[in-house]
Amino acid sequence: MKKPRFLMTDPAHYEVTYSINPWMQPDLWAADVEGSRAAAHAAWQKLKETLTQAGAEVVEAPGAAGLPDMVFPSNSAVVLDGRALVSRFRHSERQPEAERFLDVFRGLGDRGLLSEVEQLPEGLTQEGEGDCVWDPARQLFWAGHGPRSSRDAADYVARFFDATVVPLELVAPHYYHMDVCLMPLEGGEVLYFPPAFTSEGQAELRSRVEPGQLIEVAEQDAQALAINAVNVGRNVVLAAGAPRLCEQLSERGYTPLEVDLTPFIQSGGASFCMTLRLDWERG
Image (tube, rainbow, N blue to C red; front, top):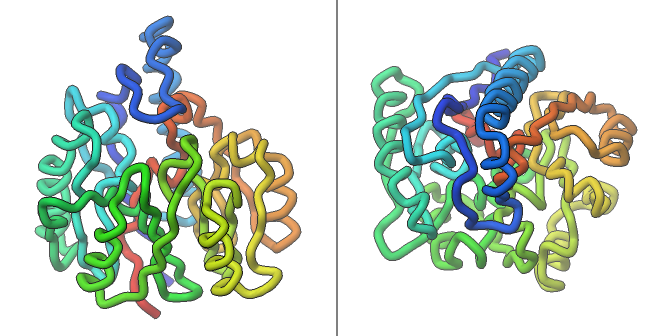
């Protein structure tokens, strides 16, 4: 059985110097820049080691000076069946990342890790797997729209991949991307934080996810960004500080592997944000 393959971006240029979501705390970072950088590097290394120990393969890409959020490659593209659809970002601070990631993905194509690389057309905004999460059990994408990604981008993703895409509007400022409030597990369960969605979105989830498979995550655990997790088989790599969610996962036969990702949570990202799954294929 082949190992799941994830892209991670070198954290050398990571810092918190601007604020484009409610999590971002540039003042906290600035209070101890060297200490913050050291803590971020250690946390990134620990995440990589934990993913590897869980059974994953990690492919590294370089970051770029002045683009600190490249450390969150989940936002860079949607990838399925070897095809990468590269993002267009809403905020000016992140828009230059797209060209850098195009180079990264073309390089992965040269290595035989991708078969096709395209970019979302101009006029649409869509921030990769951050707002378009693949559900392997249901063979569909859950697509967030509102804070970062446009509703019509979900239709383009559906056409590009010839796949089912279920758009869900996000309405809570702290849950600005789909990947911080919803996580499908390989066993068919779906973790979610209901207040992040409209009542219509919650109803859509209940209509598509079987009773007993839709797992409501407590607010404390959602605020720890623990839903922003990486599932590798029966292992779930998640941010530390979510005791009830760890219990829920263990009760269902998963092994929760906690990592202290505090330096990255200061920017609004955790395990899922810091990775991009490169090898999803339709079953």
